[in-house]
Length: 185
Image 1 (cartoon, rainbow, N blue to C red):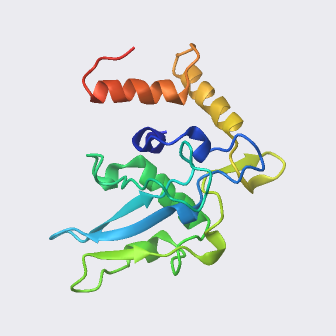
Image 2 (cartoon, rainbow, N blue to C red; image 1 turned 120 degrees about the vertical axis):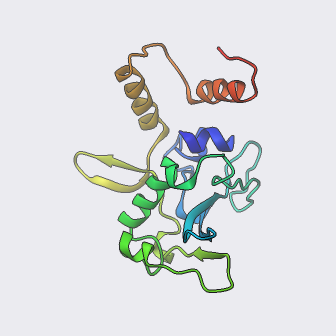
């Protein structure tokens, strides 16, 4: 949800509306980088390549690439979306040469460099990051469909005591108005 709000992407870029539309956030769409922090080691940063934006019909045409950390003003080690991405990447064995969190924490940025880009395993490049799961099959290799995301969002809102219909677009619009100091709903 946070990544959706920060990027301005259409929700279909993350969760496809049709099974065969080829959409859904994939590992190839994310770049992970370790960046040196003076006097304190390094932090993980990531960048998202958006292929599925309004009026872009060519999925190989990357039209917008926001850097999601640390430009959003939240320290990376407190950015929940990055922690989820790393947890999913480790569970999927998606990062080249990294099999565990310990392997990741042991990495060193070479002297004289400020960054160390991480590579994805070739087998993970086309894998959806946010995947569907069922009781029968467990986690599948299919992207989580928008209909499932909508059900999860409605359930979370209901559990929070909010019963009115809400869309992710309304949440992003409200957040943008608050950030711009224009009030809100």
